Amino acid sequence: MSTKSSPFLGLVNAPDIPASLPWYNTEQPLSLKNLQGRFVLLKFWTSGCINCLHTFDEVDQLRKKFHQDLVVIGVHTGKFTYERSGFLLRNAIQKIGIDFPVVDDFKYQIWESYTIQAWPSFILIAPNGKIIGQCSGEGSYKLLNQILSRAISYWVENKKYSPFDSQNEIQYGFHTNPFFSVQKKSGEVISGLNYPTGLATDHLKKRLFISDTGNHRILMIEESGVVLNAIGGLDAGFKDGEFSEVKFRKPRGIFFDEAHDCLFIADEGNHAIRRVSLAHRKVDTIAGNGFQSVVKPVQGRAEEIGLNSPWDIVKKGGSLIMAMAGSHQLWEFNLDSNSLQLLAGSGREELYDTRAEHAALAQPSSLLFHKDRLLFLDTESSALRSLELNDSADFEFKGVKHVKTLIGKGLFHFGDKDGEFDDALLQHPRGLAQHHEFVYLSDTYNHKIKRLDLRLRKIETLIDNTEYDLLMSEPEGIAISFPHLFIADSNHHRILCYNLETKTFRKVELIMQELNT
Image (tube, rainbow, N blue to C red; front, side, top):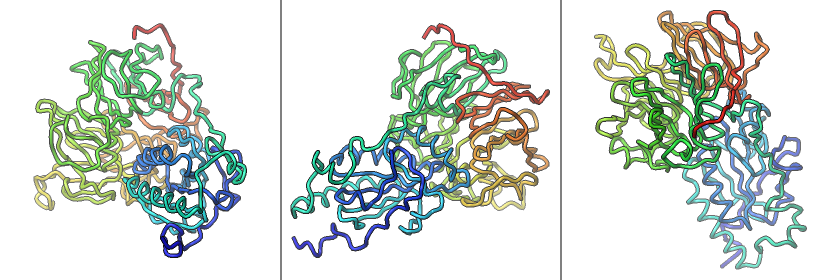
């Protein structure tokens, strides 16, 4: 084999990483120059992107297979203003459980030097410091695995490289397993919660249900804070059964079905919908097989179709509606026929209004039925949208389900602006709730709770961090048991309660007791 013509030698030098940028999961800044002699994979990502989150599993597969040859560096280039803050990145690393070095490219310096165009993207660098591969999007494992396998074989055969051993550990100045100090996430938080997200209320019995996402469990508590049940353990898994043996993986959205005294859980990490029977103290899986769908199916039996990061769920009659964040769609699950079908979204990530099946969504994450329409948050486009049936004679889609945007202008239009819907701006919102004529919204990356009047088409800030001592950080799920508005203050590992009548705050202190789990 001619070494001069081999693509595994590369042609272009990989631009080095500016020394001034902040690093995480490493004791000191890393340099591509110092890493020469190893294969290096740069993973460009941003924390709010569901497609970026999915590729961490692909990267883990590569790290396990090529642990003697490959160094992975995460390059976080935040899309949203808040994503460019060190506070967000520290929390994101802990939430995801990243244990490889991450550099904060908050000024887009590395992004621009590699002319990156999309999240997620990958750059593969050979031991001589030259680029030998580049790709973007989910499903990149197959290509990267192929390139790495062939490239390593080429370098070994031509005696240009040898797999890692203790001697070249000294030569290259780092340790591969590990060569950095992992910042373990702390479960030792006062509340006992770990990045809670989803909430649901039972206003009759004054119960609150919490997706304790970082602890992979569901908590049922009294509104006063007394913990009644812990459903699931502290370790991730996928298992049905009794409350004490069931396993979840990063559960998020919760819907409480009062008529049947059960919960429906969007088990996002397992790509599944779980049903919790509170009376029988059992959990079963009703949709999804534990694996992410790699296609965007239109219809079929629930047990035969893989899901793709279901983020929230609501029930209407005999159907469940799912916010399928990973495929940028809304799906409907008919409980009687045990069948799934597409409700809205072509699968293309964009903000585009039209007939439901052709509309483009962008990471739908929260659902709410309000009168005759389904409201949903399109998180990645910072939008509030609706799925509705319009029968007016002058509407193009008379008698046909269609998607309509109420607040939002596109994937790269975001901010913090109240007022008329047409002018308002949000930043990565993630939670919806309602009481009578008002709809409430957690504007997550603005750390605010906002109130909407759909009749007047106006939005206003209800809870602003500057007005209270209890500052919020990335509030996600919200739920109302009037007069109480409960808030999952995710980054502070706690639940807050805001009294809508007295306009006062309190922290819900969890009171643990011996549970019959």
